[in-house]
Length: 293
Image (cartoon, rainbow, N blue to C red):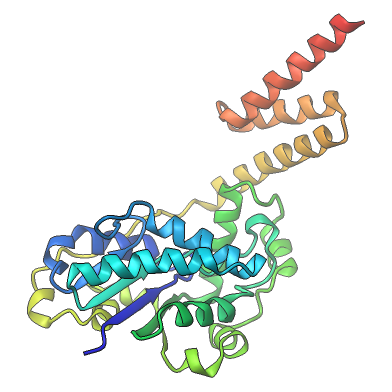
């Protein structure tokens, strides 16, 4: 019998944390059925398996170096086979690239198809299934925007953010445009609103082959990552604008403007370590400059 590998790749802001923590919370009950590889659970004998695989896949896609990806997946497969369990779950919403707005990314998962094909190759000999969760478009875009605001990736208003990023591609369009037929026929998408409203994630458990009798005894799903209010997002956006302007002033060697903008940021959200560190560095540089005179 061919063992199954389920790759759950997000998408971002569609409940990945809740799903991963559900699997982790039910690790004992699922132990006979699933070998999980995710942030909250490593397979036996491996630590930090997900970051290891993510870095290796990134190197394969961006630099054309596949050795690290081959070795990382081989370690995971060895642990999976040694576990004796019928199904391997690899769950990581960052495996297929960053979300819109992260590190200047303006396209929606541009390497999705390339990474799916790579994983298919690395998992040759297994019954590989790909599972992605989607979300109502407007709610998803707002959540992605909020994540960019929290991560100080942007200071743009929401409408400007939407206009400058690839936001008109539907989920079906994304799969159709980026994914080859060989992977598309084994790829499933499900609305997270439906999956997360139930006590347990039915589609995920179906993919993992968890029996009905086991499901009845599983701990229920819990929602995580409470949304920021619109007022809080706007407050953080103004903070980001000050920080980003401060960084730009530093690059231009304008210490006075940089200090003014970082002081503005400190007023908006006091106590942020990065801002305090920058103010201290600028103050020290000013003192040293004065002493040099």
